[in-house]
Length: 336
Image 1 (cartoon, rainbow, N blue to C red):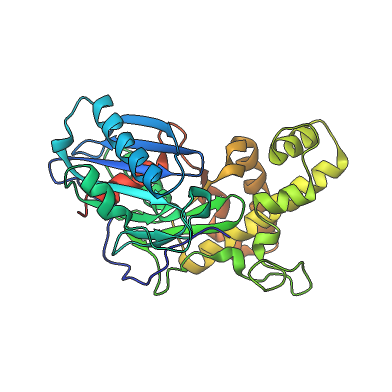
Image 2: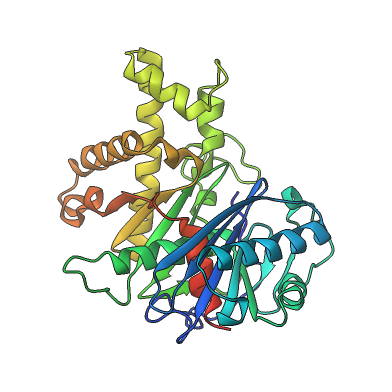
């Protein structure tokens, strides 16, 4: 299961469009269990600096490490801390974006007690406003921002909409609808991994049976094709399929079909322009994209309705030339 925001909120309180920082710079940090990725955006929303640091676990280490990452990325862009309009953080766990707190980020050493991360980091940075958001949501905002700025014709396209489909340990999506981050009233928007698709399927950690996550996620793939040579299971599976291993081909095709089902579900429920594949499994790159697009075309053969939606054309990989989640955090940082 991919962690999501723990509180409800209006879908209209943030936008991923327009100028970033209202004449100033903004910083975004994507904080994970092993590393912090940072991005500095200029007032026009261009990435002008990046940084990568190791994550320090525990409340004190987390705050200190994030503060240093902000200072480092600001320095990499040749600007002063005073030039910042705000800082955004993307972090796993149960996040209250309104109060700037996080808890149950167990892979960061943050457990049951709410950590007032926004308040503590702002104090470390001399009062720079800080906002905190779920890691999957910032990835969706970042992907939308990158797409807006790469629209054909060289002009940024406003009101982008997309689903960022995270193929990680679990399966979930972040949603940007008409330029607005969509959380839902309980923060569960996009939790498609826990939609049952097979009533006779394996039991899921959520308590249901046959959830989509059990078929289309990194954990599902590892269960179907455990690593045998020390490489990540997705890499070994696709290598074996490429070499002609018949069983590997079956597992690969089954996984691609399940991922295609997730794409189809997102398009049929939200009709987003793009479905962006991200997360650990997406690091397979074009091999994964080709497999999912082939599965979508195959599924569309039985339905002229599905064919008319051009599902395969809507799918793409997350950008690799920028840290997308950190960019999204910086975009949200302008709210402050």
